[in-house]
Image 1 (cartoon, helix red, strand yellow):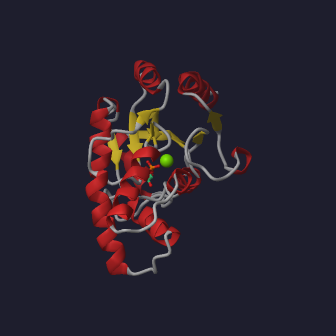
Image 2 (tube, protein in one colour):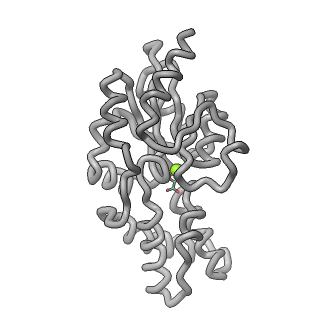
Length: 224
Ligand SMILES: O=C(O)COP(=O)(O)O
Ligand SMILES: [Mg+2]
């Protein structure tokens, strides 16, 4: 293990704005089932705890009873739609430049997401993010998911550094970092429900152009 600090990123709502594809996939399933569609705002608010939770929330939104067999069936239909090149998803502005600058600063980088492994790797390859991330934890990597701190600790161990700054967009990410004992940088343009002031964070930013300087400041503060 090195005394170095790493950077670990969340994916949906942090590096990529994937809500349009998740909304589209959910509504494709609902249309196929002759059920009412959900709004974009609903879909966006259902993101953060992974696909099974998103499907539970969709079922609740369209008035379906909680039924495990029905949930499993709709989740499988959803995953079929989700497991495709992300046509409507975009990188947040400045992400690629920020990652290149952070790599040039010598920072090890990883990813800790509740997104299922297959669409995660499709998106990482599609956007050219994979070469920057030397350790990745997805929904199925461990039995636990965020906000359990285990996946974040797993990525930290794989990166082999003593500490890391976790960069994420949501309540789930803030809680995960807190429970893992890691500092948290909040990206404000993702899918959080809570006001910035009410989410515990060490740093906050609204554009990736600001991230390299923020990280440099964080490293200086830690070294002081
Ligand atoms: O897809 C989700 O529900 C959450 O994904 P994230 O952990 O990358 O935000
Ligand atoms: Mg997120």
